[in-house]
Amino acid sequence: MKHLKALAMNPIIGCPVEVVRTTSPGPIVKGVIADETLKTITVRTEKGDKQLQKRSIRLRIGMPSGIVEVEGHQLMQRPHERLKKLWKNIR
Image 1 (tube, rainbow, N blue to C red):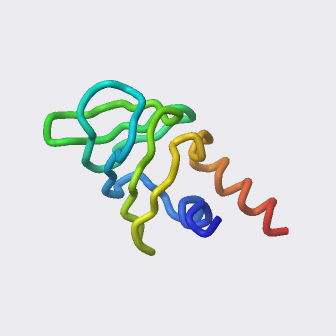
Image 2 (image 1 turned 90 degrees about the horizontal axis):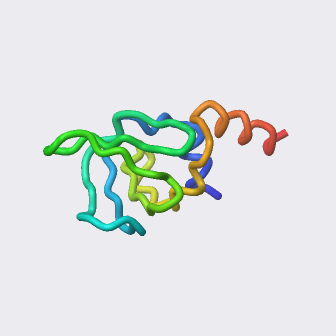
């Protein structure tokens, strides 16, 4: 749960990221998170932007508090909704 709190309290756009597992064919993606929507994450790589489905990946994200490894389906919310959900659980 600690890693989910870190993700809710800090924006992930601009953080370094590496896709450590994916169900999609193709190479492992490494770069910086450029954008995030409800179901996708856009990673800026040396070869351009790659849009990835959250439900099919496992990510290693460099956060200010350290490296966090998380399943993409755990991020299946908009960034502001993650923060709202965290505050509901704290009360």
